[in-house]
Length: 178
Picture (cartoon, helix red, strand yellow):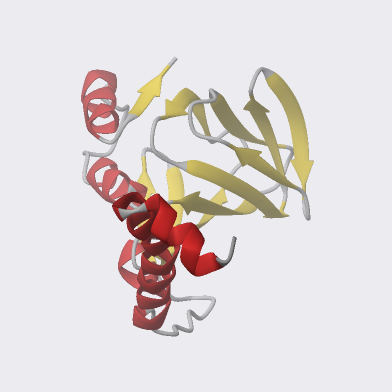
């Protein structure tokens, strides 16, 4: 059976089925064509303090059309985030300097400069900077959007965090503590 006969035999369902890849390709092409190049220098980006986690937004959903967010974190030993789960995002941690203890999926490991780890959505994870020097970590988040949660958390008053307020903000973005 040739292609034309095959699609005729499928009727309207075949037309719809055959159109899906074309629409997906066109939609993907539109997204890619709408992205604008951006150069971010070492000292550029929006810096915030998210309950002790010092972050600089290098690329946000606004830059990537919602595809991902890229954040540089520079923290002293002892800074960390307790166990939590993301409902909407996958995360990649890439250590550039220092050491990070990461627990993901029940496994704890020490990440050193050059190491990276993947934390998929739905899997509990936590991290803490260890050792005796500051660590620099690149956090890539797919898809974007979590930067809005971090912005809200960065607006909280300094001092010990109001955990119910933190949990409420995080919960609105699909992040829960375990």
